[in-house]
Length: 629
Ligand SMILES: Cc1cc2nc3c(=O)[nH]c(=O)nc-3n(C[C@H](O)[C@H](O)[C@H](O)COP(=O)(O)OP(=O)(O)OC[C@H]3O[C@@H](n4cnc5c(N)ncnc54)[C@H](O)[C@@H]3O)c2cc1C
Image (cartoon, rainbow, N blue to C red; front, side, top):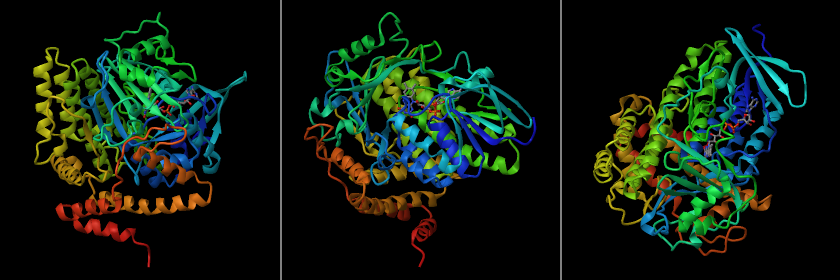
């Protein structure tokens, strides 16, 4: 193969991974070609994000200077891009027993990002994916859709792809220095090179049924008010959990709701003789609160059940033995998948892009695409998949033993989520060996995840003593000296637990406790402590302050113009205040007192100055924020 290639990089597939990768590579001066089998817009599943997903895309936007990635890091950004979505402000969990409604002591809630940083978002992927593809001409990405990649060859000098345009009989070839397989579940190169593991070696074992629906009801129209939750329940992602699975409810501002059920295959084996919709409705009907919310829903497109679409097996999990090959790499969703629980799909993609794009730009510059350069990405990705599987698989397992056991595993997820977000904010995200998804590469958290997993998967696990053991393990990392006191709840569920994350105002004490806990966590992990830069945390805080001002200005400007940004904010405010109007519901809702954001941010910034962190770095970051004289 000649060294003169048509392109530096060819990206196969233009889903969220392929499109955002192509835009950022092209912005870095990499000659990029994207080939896509289908045509946008089209239905795609994977619609809910988490704070660390938003932050990964915000980081990528700043790293690569692609302002349009704002659509992938908060709901107002998504609305400015003209996409259908929803401001995700929390994760709501309701524990369901057959025949019994959800009561306040069966509710759990964990706040996601709130304005000005957030909120996180639900994205209708048809709009969302299409938006990024439409930006290709602006960034100089060459694009060919309705064309499948049918062949791949590589040697030490480059790669050659065979393309087959739809409806044509002739194929053509195109060459590049490097190829990134972003074909998602189709996993073109993994299959070609036999990299997909026959037995993925994962503890999660689930299948799924999902679709888009109209005529769903808001939980606040069904359940009694619960001030502890503090938001409209549907203002976030709904998780109904039960023995053997969970149901997601992902709202969009179009009035459509994405609803899916994910089932433990050991508890609910697939029976092909039962149609997907019948199976879905049977499960919904078992649980009165779910039935009240979703019993009358009407599908607006065919319901999908994993099996036929997933290469003949109903199991959603898959994994590969390697993600790096000669002149190619596999994107996260082409390499492995665990479960929709905790929305780790796009999160893994964002984390991968943070690491891969700078490495690829450097490879072009150096003319060196050797596999060793990309191997650290593989090592970290494999650890990430292991951590996600252990948390998710353990969570599924906990549902077999009831709500008490589930609550202890839920604590693990909170701990891991907090450790991941805060540590990733503080460390350079392009570092392939830095803190990863679900706290991969943070040794003390990895150990905790493995310990909890070993307990719940112990064949001799017995609910009473096993749950106590899970609690004792979590209590160890959450003692009052370095753990958020909020986590110190009794083993018997007697009340709703609502965890208000860093970005909320009314939990000043919790924020300070959390910072103290986080400092302890970093100190416990010298490899991470060496990577943490306190100035990054200070900049994160200052950016909140800046964004609060710029968003207020943008709202005013928007009112004079197309009104889109102002409308996005008004939807957020309405959900927060529960005064939902118009297309959503007439429900009066709950009152949630908006915090004084500026005072809150000052408080956090002061906590950094006073308690620990290098005052100079904070000051320097603050000076850097000041406009030039
Ligand atoms: C049931 C379910 C629920 C999920 N829910 C969530 C969630 O809530 N949040 C979350 O973060 N993630 C979720 N995920 C994961 C999420 O769907 C994926 O992580 C995400 O869609 C991956 O995006 P991608 O761009 O890598 O792949 P895709 O979106 O699958 O894009 C792949 C593209 O490649 C193209 N392609 C395929 N083969 C070829 C070929 N041979 N030649 C050319 N083009 C080709 C396809 O047409 C497609 O456009 C969920 C997954 C499942 C299965």
